[in-house]
Image (cartoon, rainbow, N blue to C red; front, side, top):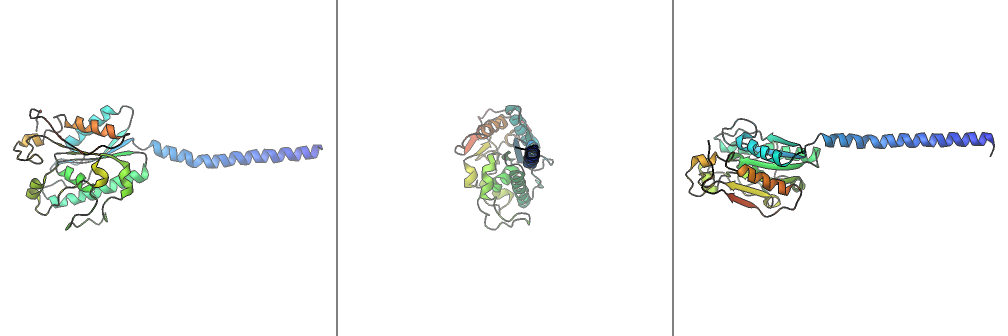
Length: 254
């Protein structure tokens, strides 16, 4: 081969190498960006609705639950989101919490698809969380403008577990709001839901009269029970729904 041809071949080869490197840079760019976005996402996102009259945020029971999760997931980022709703005696406004929880869950699922979502709630907040899982819109319920219906079925796989504390039973719901629909956990969530009710809790325990039992979830060990359940669900198959009632001698508090 002549010197001229060798020179031309070298230039062609060099150009091809540069083109390949440039293409590699273009291809690598979006991958690096995606990885950076993933790095900004939490391993676990707790979406928790507080109880009546608790200050905005996750509330005392929610914080105890989040702390228990953190203790069981060393090295993993656990973030908590307090559902935005009034948490007042106007139980009808709980639907605002359902809308906020549903929108937050969908946003996390879209922006951080690898994040495991944990839905939870205490007292009125447990009703909010329970309604959020519903497969249908209960008859007579008017939805806020921010949602059009139940969570899409595609979102359910992003929710690893649901933890409810002191969920109002039908009798108590009737006292709070005669028009309140029953709390029915949706089929896509029932198998990964734990409901905890302390004996004597008048909100969830049949015939319960111990008001202190209703405020004891943050210290009676049930936050730990719920955290153990959730951790078991973060990577494994979901079991049947669980209803846990503590022993009669659990510690109580305000």
